[in-house]
Length: 253
Length: 202
Image (tube, rainbow over all chains, first blue to last red; front, side):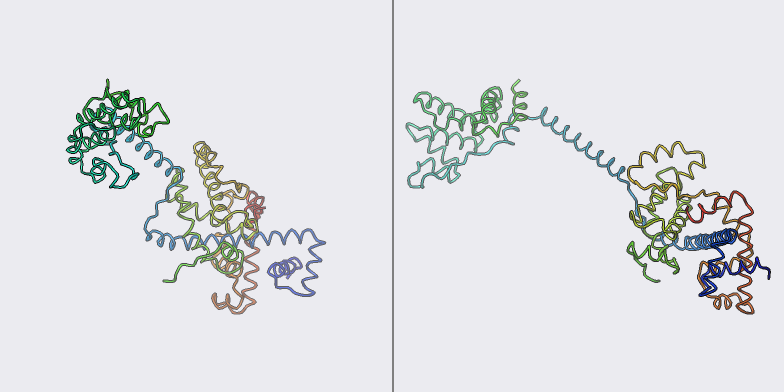
């Protein structure tokens, strides 16, 4: 074996970590002082790296088919990108906004005074300020929820008070008799005017307006609703929102 | 059928850095990453076949970068693989002459990954040329060199597998095969000039 091939063999053994002790020290010294040996060692290391790259490539290729078979057996998991999710979300949101808009427009153009009344009416609730024994007959009957009895009892009162008119009007509304409710609420307003009192005044504003709606007279309801809407301190202000008022205005035209 | 092994990032990197067989790590990467690569390639003007080819190449680059200590966990494995995939696919589209379309999309998605691994992505053609050179070796030479260097088998095991007379004969054969491959590699100037960047990512 020539010197060259001896050196190459030693370099390979050194590269493969097969030398120890003196032999290792000796070749390291030679590499440090001989540029051609250092260059050959580098070349051998690159050759070894090429073998490893080739081996890894083959390894991956051999596992590839196996893994493709395994992955194809799995239920297909659809990968959806954020962009796609965002696009679909925006589309759904746009459709919902459109549907909402169409629904609001439909409601706006197709609402009748009576529909508006029915979807917003809540009967008046008497507060528990007096015991049954001290409450008026009408009040006691109203608390019981007997609207017919309230209306009958009202007829027997020779000089009704403001509260009597108001309770009778609410009983009439419960019984879908808006004309009678209007009559009582107007009488209540007249009474307050005559006596310079303000009993059930703000309640009467709202329930009179609602009675007009129920009686298909939105043009008479409108000024009352506008008054309530424009007065932030009015106890029924929150019940008369902008959208509600617009619908009443359209119906009043 | 054996249950699929699940790796923590550290365990995965440790296995790939070691001389132990990488099979389980590769399978794990297929199970967890191939779907992402496939979706990316298909969304960017590629086919399922492209995805399979690119993924094999990405895995090879990824494993070699780990073995050469070029990845020290600065990002997650998934982010790193994604960056390699994007660069490899961009190179491929450039080669196919569809770079304009690709670059536009690439720029748009650049913000999602800050890692720049473009300098690690070796020229595919040079690497393919190198693999062809190794293929030129006879089967016996390839078997001996792969058994010794890639599979880390001891001479005794190689002797049993290849049925030579004795260890010294195998050792001599290995010496000759290695020198033969070295000569084949250095004979091609373009390959010789790029060996370090292709093999050691330097």
